[in-house]
Image (cartoon, rainbow, N blue to C red; front, side, top):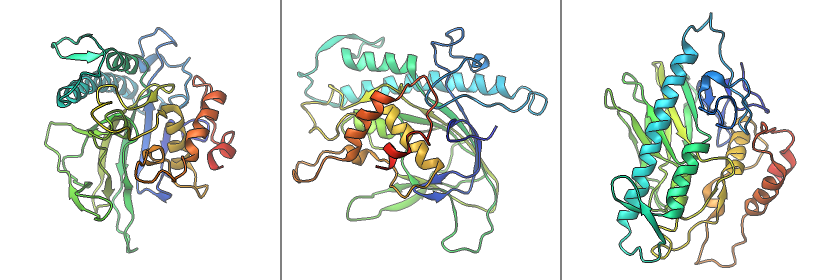
Length: 329
């Protein structure tokens, strides 16, 4: 059940973050498209599953009895919670913007907060077509004398919209970078879990959607002399979703990013996790607009994602080898 260049899901112990191997082993289990099987999205009926990330791979039931059923229940609960959190985030975004006269209002959500039609349809599309996945991490004890010591995961930001993280109460190794900017590195602060609570993180796509009001914080996992277990649920848009600055903030914030095709962004992040082709990992900064430097060329990713959109079938597993020429050009 090891993952491969044609299937991002399954077991692995060789992931790269920023071209540096992580000190961890994981199993990734992803969403089931609602257009297959009985339409419920249940992980218990994904034999007909087809999507860009590939197909779930499960340990035999005699080896891990009840594992698939338990993962399905937890996955479904995380998806529903993420739907609610995303709605609250976007409602909060609308309330933060003092001048919403530019927004075409199209109705009210259940609690009476009025959202634009496009914001509500984005939420509905994401709820129905999300490409989320649950990662089950194990960070083994590390007694390395190498300096600097290995990292469980190197510095990064989460690519999707938001993350629901179940932490290990007994081993506190997750750190977030506080106060970082262009001139200063900031300070790494340990995120100590509250027993019985979940940790919520903002992702890159939420940062783009909000025009930078929401921030995707850089974070990492340091190694420890103890075992650490965690389970992040990455709540991601549909593969064909173009994530741009929401009309909620247009007119109140400068346009900061060009639209990003989530399927392209996700495919390149996976390729960077799996291989080292000598190219930098894709970041939202590649789609950033810079009013102060009009001579700066548009990133090659803007054109490459158009080509990817034309060539890729989001109902077929992404093949790293097939797209190597496009991804490394």
